[in-house]
Amino acid sequence: MTTSVDGLVSGLSTSSLIQQLMQVEKAPQDRLKTKVTTAQTAVSSYQSVNSKLSSLKSAADDISQLKTWRAIKPTSTSSNVTATATGGLNAAAGELTFDITKLARAQSTTMKVDTTKSFDTNNDGTPDAPVRITNAASLDVTPVTYDKDGLVISTGTPVPVDISADQSAEGIAKAINQANLGIRAYVVKVSDTEGVLQFTGTKPGADKGFTIDGLNGTGVGGTDPVTRVSQNAVMQVGDPNNGGYTIESGNNTFADVIPGVTITATKEDNNVTVSAAADVSGVAAKFQALVDAANATLTEIGTQTAYNAETKKGSPLTGDFMVRQMSQTILSAVSIGLTYPNPKFDANQAEGPGNLKNIEFGSLAKLGIELSRDGKLSFDAGKFTAGYNTDPAAIQEAGIALGDAFESLAGKQSTSVTAVVTGRKNEIDTINTQISNWDVRLSARQAALQRQYASLETSLGSLKNQSSWLAGQLGGLG
Image (cartoon, rainbow, N blue to C red; front, side, top):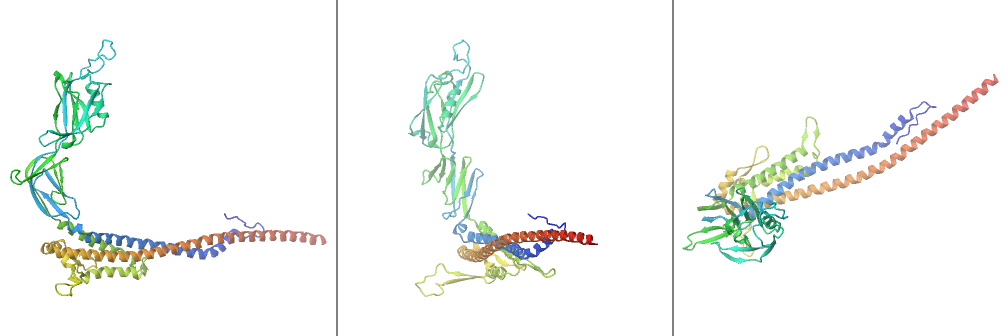
């Protein structure tokens, strides 16, 4: 805190003098602060470039992955059956024709019940609760599995459900719901006196069935519950009497009937054909992403190293040769063509036409990638697709090699930039420490100046008093 010591004796603005002296004293610290600001701006610029390099490396990695090249694009001839690619290395092109003869469904058990309020719970002669539909204290719910004809082929352990508190239709539904058995129970009113007690499985599938023992003969007119059993979806492939086969699914989804393809049915249908072909457009999109990432990197490098000749002002990284050189390295990777190690090279045999150590693929135009007039990259999906359709194996091999090359290039450049950023941050930390030390030094210097000028005022005041006394003495002599 600055203390004013403006002199009443000297008439000097000592606080202003101290402030001006401190400005001179602070000049070295101000220069350090300017260096920190400049360094922080450079770090931000390096990080912007590094972000683009990271995106370029990621896009290149996508190109180099075998799963990219094994991606498939499935289609279906039926609007009732959808086919989706699941990805992975096991995906394969293929075709399958089949019938969907059944859809998976959950079990539904219903029974007509009396819903009138005719039960006198407190024996006062007035009906005050729904009529009991059974006198049983509990019901046994048993999990079951059905075969394709709806017959029970296995049973689980019965689970007793206590209904002694309320044996009406609503009470039974409440008890079943509270038991959490995978069954949803409720009563649907169909008239003033009747309703339907319905039990519905929460999941479809032949192994999600159930039986409820204790309700037979308790429906309206002594009727039993009626059950529509749960079942699996069934796909019939080929003639069942001539080498055909069936596939079942508990949820209408059939996985990997064609490797890497999931088939989902929404309705029974016949003569459905699902085809899976190589997803060339998907691979082309990956190449477009690589070119876009490379162009974004080139643009960012250009922005951060630009120099305006008219204003004679540069950008944060104008003088950084390492960053400027990155653009030339990326462009050269395209202009010089592609050469890569032959994955089929046999080191145990002499190198020759049939056993080359390196493959000279040549111009990237065969992959649809070229240099444009503005110093950027362009991609022609049509050229890529034509090349792939002509020789898929060669284009795949070259594409993976290109992805590896760009991934390595971007990785090395990113490592260099990261090292520079780390060095600059360490420099900033060191300078900030010096700035903090200057704060202590300047505070001590300001306090010393304040004491010095305060002492000066005191001395001047004493001299003024002596002068006044002396003048008084001299005047008395006259």
